[in-house]
Image (tube, rainbow, N blue to C red; front, side, top):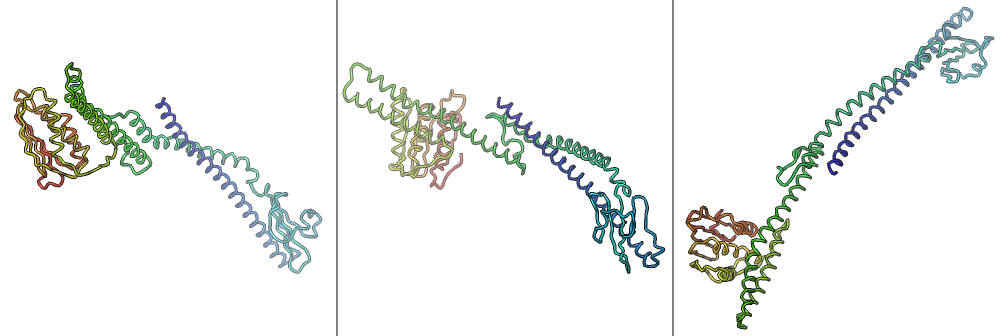
Length: 416
């Protein structure tokens, strides 16, 4: 249904462009016809007025030489009179001196006073008899109409062709957007253009990038949250299993209830932390955090969950070790590093913490085909390290796995 709407819109765009060209050419053809017709009419009037003036001047010159020999000019469409002429039309008698056109009579007249005489000279030229324009007006109008129709037709052809050409980028851009998905390559067609198509392409590209970024954050939230919530859920499950035993001392019940309460608080904190990470822009809430306390708490919590007791962990922790960071993120980061040790270390691990860096190194089961370097936990570590402006170095081979976390005020930072 949306596809049909888009196609209808594109067709409407082509129709509007074509209609604009037709309207423009039709208006131009009408203006052209009116201009040509009036130009011809004004030219005809000017020619006839000049003819009137020439004939009048010629007669007056002859009259001055010899009044008796001067002959009134007469030809096809041209007649002349004197005030004493018996056939002088009544409508000429009171005409003022000068040359003019009488539209009601369709004639051009000239009236002059004869020198040294009381008489007036009148000359009349009929437009119908002296000019073909009046007789051929209908034919001229047909010619102008034909030319106007031809111009309009040419405008229609140009309009259709040009509208299709101009709408092609919009149609292609629309098709690409309609067929795009989360795996489509960006930017869209026309991104580098400097016209309206480029502006639309850039707007759609940026909007799609923001949408893809939002979807990616949603996926990361789901993946990371499900990964992180396993620990508090396991603690709650184990504590409940212990509480369900028949013989329970009050002290033991209190400890397990406290574990459930702490695990619940951890779940709430984790969910809120990953909701914050899922935002477009993350706002840090930094404070002084004792990394050694977070590290010891994480070691204790993960040791309780370790059912095998196979690990021999050596820890050299400078206490206190405080840095300026977001405590919520730092807690998740430390917990993921330690949980990674308990999940993938074979028999031993070594932990070093000082004001510059945190080093965690463990051995790997030789039967493992490859080191566990790209787990969800390490993805979270890398993500939070970027947000906190830390540098993380991961060194792995078939026998050992080492994570080095350089704090941002350290001078010997390494790039992973």
